[in-house]
Amino acid sequence: MVHSLGLTLYNLRPRLVSGAAIVRKERPAGRLIWLHAPTPASLSGLLELARLLVEEDGLSVLLTGSELQTGFDWLLQDSPPEDNQVDVRTFLDHWRPDAAVFSDGELRPAVLHEAGERRIPLLMADARIPYMMRDRDGWYPGLIKSSLQAFQKIVAVDETAARGFRKAGAAIETVVALGRLEENSAVLPCLEAERAALAKLLATRPVWLAAGLPEAEEDAVIAAHRATLSLAHRLLLIIAPQDAERAEALANRLTKEEGWVVARRAIDEEPEPDVEVFITDGMTELGLWYRLAPISFLGGSLAGQGCLRSPMEPAALGSAILYGPRSGNFGTSFGRLGAGRAARAVGNARDLAEALADLMAPDKVARLAQAAWGIASEGAEVTDHVRATLHSMIKEAR
Image 1 (cartoon, rainbow, N blue to C red):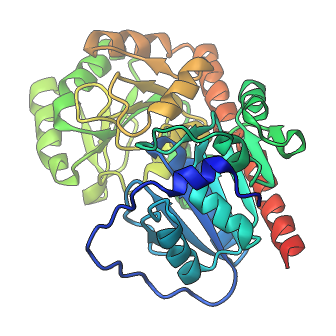
Image 2 (tube, rainbow, N blue to C red):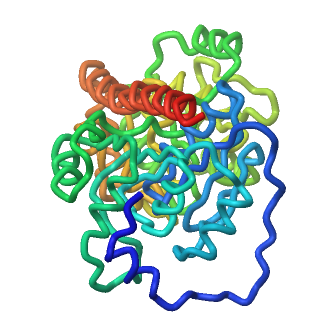
């Protein structure tokens, strides 16, 4: 890679020294792909890519980002190196990636230059807009252009983004507008025999689900169910409480205060025809409940601390989505669904009741669910393209 004047000036910045020794896990044998997620919004697609690379391609994957992720024991994780020659070389000497995937559009000039010197294939996915790292203000002539030209492939989210990368200096032939990566863990599993048995038991009953329901939103959900029962008297509410230990107290409240027939999963009760509310064992079987409920309200989004589950989970399983204004870590996903008219936003308890009543019309709920499914599944081809490109780049770099 050509060493530009901009990169020379960039490398003259004072080096940040933490003073703490960096302890890294041992690099596993075999091929290793480095994925870098600069923002929480860019993480989901990379996690799904990582899962496929590990489970289906048998590769090791290193993930770096703004913070470490929990619950991914199959994934190597590290903090990204400070973007200077010394730290970058130490990082690359240790991990020796066979290819690297960056996302969103963040540029790390020292990393990109050193990777180019080592002939490490570079790909940018979910490319939205090219930008320098935070706190890297200064005059660096030609640095963005030279950094972009380090990439062998840039997969932009749309044609507008693709034009932005070309205008900023990326080689024209490297930029393609394909869309976003598929979001991670969208299709939750379930036992098919159990799904079939419960579906037979529920038959043609209208069903809705409150997924990850916190105590703060119980009143809103109860009011919505009460109001809609007057329109659809066979309506069943499935509650997957955020806190599984809340199930017994909630069941007692619904029985005593509302006079409803309540069944609980924890004590092996079934949603028999006379049951009006079925309370599950928390959020452990959401793949089952999303498949059974044509409508899902995502708990935490209305009056809680923010939605705890990705809306792409019910979307991928054909359940129409109701959600409040508190998106939690899933603002980008809710934004995509909202822009595609693939989810219904509610602002308060009254809105929830009105939206639920409106979705008792089969044609309306079907349109909403179909639109959500389309958005949840549209990234699969992009992810497959990125995987294939990575394999091709690694093969050519040998």
